[in-house]
Image (cartoon, rainbow, N blue to C red; front, side):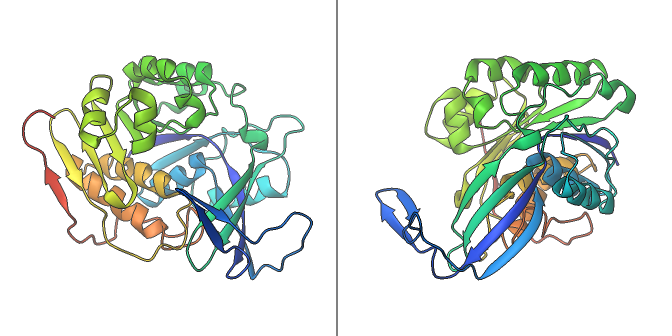
Length: 324
């Protein structure tokens, strides 16, 4: 068991689920909803409320795998914030370091989901999770974590730097899954990587950071900045290195996808949850893939998250020989 701080956003996810009105039309490589006309009204087949946000999604994976978990982020003092606190409490997650910015409302995502295809469009109000510069890295001194797991802080690079420097000064390891606002300033992200032990990106994000088009090329570039690098590529699997061994892996299994919300969070947190429990690098990649595969079979970013008791079957994972 490890003490893990999960740093990032907390949102209420509202699902609008329909089988007919969200039909799609293709424009080149872009798929768009075709039946939603401005000024019209539509009946939705189903409505669901879930808890989302990268910080809380990851925290739940860690907790379900027996770790001591502290969530750090921002909430509003409103019904959505109360729902998030209730969920975190149910999962046994320490919420004592959550901040409540004055007059801020809890962030919310409205997810338009086509139940026939699993395609979705997300409308997000960031609210209290729009900024993180009110959070104090000095709180880590009281927590004394083994790991800091950081998802996007909406481009608050100074706050990230403060947390990373403090974590390393305490002897903690750092895993980082940056978002698009961090990747919009790639030079600043690359400078942060000297504090990072594990970096998680998808293929598109890796290309934004260092340029390139092939997974091997991207991994080759990123391993110069960070010892352990994980790059996912959707249905194609991904590639990873820990500085000693490198693997090319496929998906855990071919399943019907209901909802891709939280799949990246499930992969990253699944990897760290297993690694912090003493699993090997290869075993941690398998658990990460299984966790992500389980999540996409359910609606909601936390439904389907696995615990350490799950029995895993073998998956396609290949040790890469020589220098990449």
